[in-house]
Image (cartoon, rainbow, N blue to C red; front, top):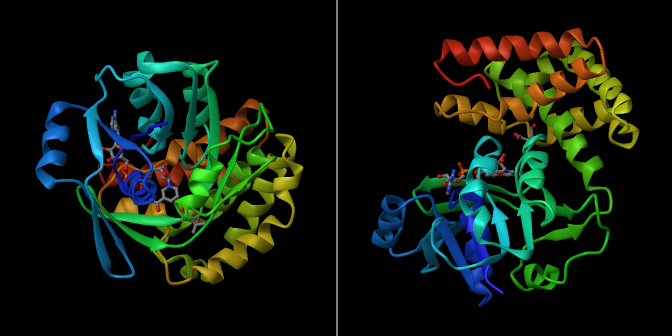
Length: 303
Ligand code: NAD
Ligand code: KPL
């Protein structure tokens, strides 16, 4: 069964290279002929691991190709995922399975509703990759991929293909808890690193602000029936700040490179969820509003 990969960016190339290296059939889906031509010109994708570059001449086609798609890895940003999936929707087979790699929350429900009844497996990834050039990913941080399906606990049979490809993964029976927990971590850390223009470790200078956000996020998680995701949140946020002290958060990196952020799927999602429940979370709302202002001041999308 071919692994179709939609989104040939950092994570898409990282996954495609490892699957291809294991001898599995992989096809990249390009948004148009121009991108396909650029890819063909590059002669394939490159993965840089531990300073070593490997080249993989993975097959590619445009989204409007006619080949049916049974297994689709969606590796676009959260704000692009649904529109990208819409481009290939008519190609999905009746028993198609999708793996959604997007960070934050909100995009997964949009994609799932669009492709229903196709099975959507949600992922929460702590692997790190960045794009050096087009179709060239640097594997910057080993991590874990938690995969799960809130509607069906049976793991798919292709997990063995991930194992054969050396893709670290675990099947999770509580993927929503993991996604909410990661959302809360990202809400507590990422916007503040942008507002204070600092590495994650720089937040040790703002303990009251971090604590106030964690308290409100715990209230929100509990109100959203995610009490497990709220357990010891403040403690874990402090641990992550210390463990990643030298790193810039993904949102800080996006802003400093002049790229659109996933704000609507992180603090934006949390604020909307709070409003829906009539929960007043003044610190979270203030940080989100300041982030919106900071993005607009830089001419970046604030949604
Ligand atoms: P990226 O920007 O490097 O790659 C996204 C790719 O999708 C781009 O190549 C873009 O051109 C492509 N794309 C967008 N719309 C498309 C369309 N309509 N048709 C075809 N291709 C389209 O992003 P990334 O860093 O790989 O992140 C993907 C997701 O994974 C994000 O939600 C991110 O938060 C999450 N994530 C990334 C990392 C990481 O280390 N990069 C880690 C964990 C989670
Ligand atoms: O996931 C992260 C990110 O930068 O997006 C961490 C390291 C947890 C900071 O929120």
